[in-house]
Image 1 (cartoon, rainbow, N blue to C red):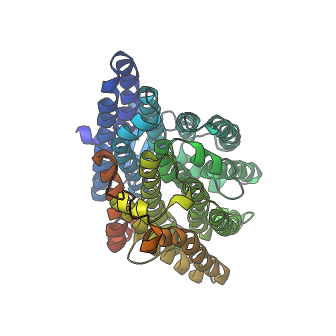
Image 2 (image 1 turned 120 degrees about the horizontal axis):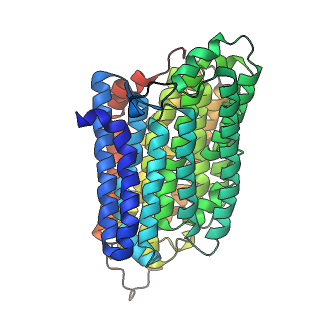
Image 3 (image 1 turned 45 degrees about the vertical axis):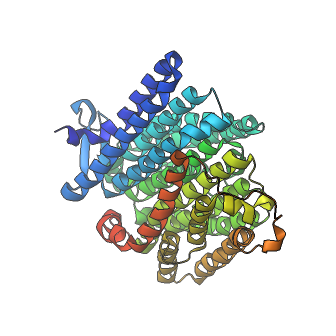
Length: 496
């Protein structure tokens, strides 16, 4: 059956779409968008098929060219990887729908290269999730990274500088990862993840393995923008075009977080990473600092988009905290926050694009009741996502934070509980100042003769924005089903 080939069909459909869209777009530019949308929809379809397939039949092993590992490359899709690749291509598809009108306004004439690069970006992220080979993961990491640099570079005047900084730090991160797997290969003789998981416990000398793990954590931590390795993120998210930020912020760092989870708990194991040098404790404490630092910096911003950029550092900290706690509740909280933050940030960055489309700026002082009346549905979507970021039930953001609180209590670490609570208060500060401007402005502050009629963005931009905001509520209400039927099945063995 063709459905059994879904692990390879997901990245192949996106790579093929990129290969076709570029030459066809040069010939007839208007055809680029339909081709990109078709490729993205096919990837989303096979991602959904993959999750259903894995939940019904268990982990799916796919050997490229029928070469059995460690000689050949293996793709492994279990409930965790199927869940994450569905998030990647679900977000990617709806941002692709959104992108058409936004690109026409912000970057006229650049639609062909942008859609091609966006498909390569999604292909790289999808490949990182489904591969079971450490070097093949590096190949896909480079595909996604090079595409991400390009998505940033075509933005505002300061975008090339931001992209160059992203390129330099991203290259350092990728180099650390490559060195790490090189050292691991010297010790184990294999690049297959499952092979390494079997070989590492049998090694009598762990020194080279520890060096390898350290390099990999630093490299992936930099790609993940884990504090204090986040320096590339604020400018990259701020100066990228609206659609570029909408691709990057929801899913790029989340896939790196997935890789961190996979390597720490599947290639190595929870006991190993907790026993030697307390790797998980270091990740947890750095993430806790990042949660507060990102929130404080977000408060200090006067530009909505830059505020979201610093907020992302804080939210990535939640995921890192769940990884560092290294218990089942922390794992559930981290993976659930990958989904929740992807939806919340997708909504908030699409809101940014909507406002920029109509007004050409996203300065926070210009947020007022006039903006709400002109863009009522956009501001409603913003409010829902903002409440979820704060952690107000029944929105999705509450439940991932709740699992992280439970995980911290289970570890008897009350400092992390305080950090989570304090960060929610800080989130309230920087989001409520905007909500207050939008909804609690006195009528007398509006000039009576000013036109404040509704003037929403085109439907192709509005529908994805509203769709993500609705999912923030729906997935919050039904989060128990996600936890019970997907995430509990993905808890790594040996995690207690």
